[in-house]
Image (cartoon, rainbow, N blue to C red; front, top):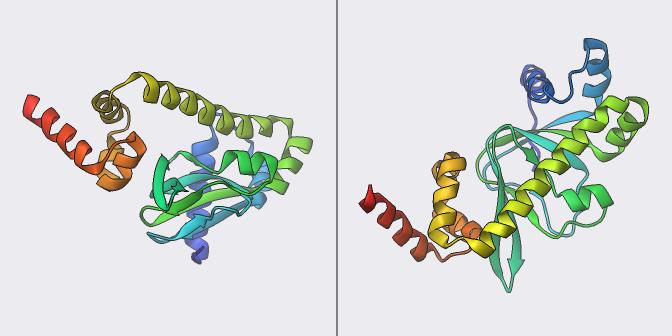
Length: 204
């Protein structure tokens, strides 16, 4: 459920969104005044669903604070396959691009704030401000690079190797993600992950 923010909080989050976007969307003040009209600051509490399976993704978002979990249901069991942390994009990309129902859920793992731009507004920006194409392209490129790397890792690395790579690249995962979700992401049982973590600690 999207929670209401005060006007001051809203403007603060918009400012944070502009700073995050600046590297690949260096808009002038005049351009930003147009661009920000399409942004919606969405505030969720821990456990809230940002997107349900079967709903169409209307927003391309950046996580201003907090983190989210992406998961699918397989034979009644939740299978986590992605997380979005502070300053990362958050979206059901295929649903957003095709404007068709999402095949997975997105849930707030902790209280989080998203700066989100609506699909319809983004299409208008592409038409009238060609430089804004970089915003959408960057989000999609990041997603597909991540997906290719993850698929190769699942085929070539052991569970321990996948965990070590995760520790090296995304140490924040280990601080914010519950063990059962992290195990699902690594495609191992929670007890197996516990053994892997213990083994690594013993070897240090």
